[in-house]
Length: 236
Image 1: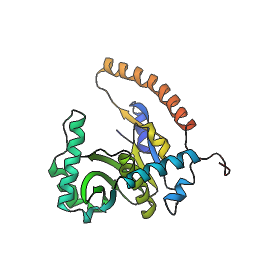
Image 2: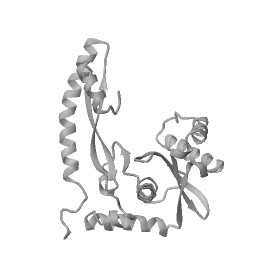
Image 3: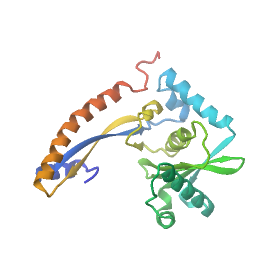
Image 4: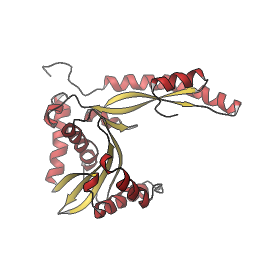
């Protein structure tokens, strides 16, 4: 059971399921009026770095567009799928979602889809797919056909953060891994899952590991919080 709410967690714990702790990264929209207001919450060093990254993308001649699900064209979906497959190829893996899957979600849930596209000389070179509702945006798939420094940060983080601000979306779930997300204003967020293993000896081995892992996760989370990029005072 992944991402249980408090009631489900209590029931599963009482039923003897083992609990595994984890940490992911989440960005909070504190009612920002614009991206600059968000940047004002960060230290001067982090603000400067983000502005430089964004400027380099613009100076590369790239233009980024955010397209909501109902407005995504067939050609844009086709390009996104090329990016999606290319990402797996670069990691020597195989895409597990078919083109038909994306056709289906485009038809059945377009109001929850955001596609961010990057164009160079009006030719698409990269894209990032997100899902969202009134409260949360979930960043999921990214890919590019031409490498441009800092483009990943622009498409996957900054464009999504601007979208959350514009649409008054409270949270942006950036997922697990990638301490570089801290420097972009994300905060560590504790997560947990519950597991039931049928084989007694196998269950015991996993339970021992989960208990030791929890100690490491707690230490890791504390270290992440110590590296938060936010200002400590109004004078910073």
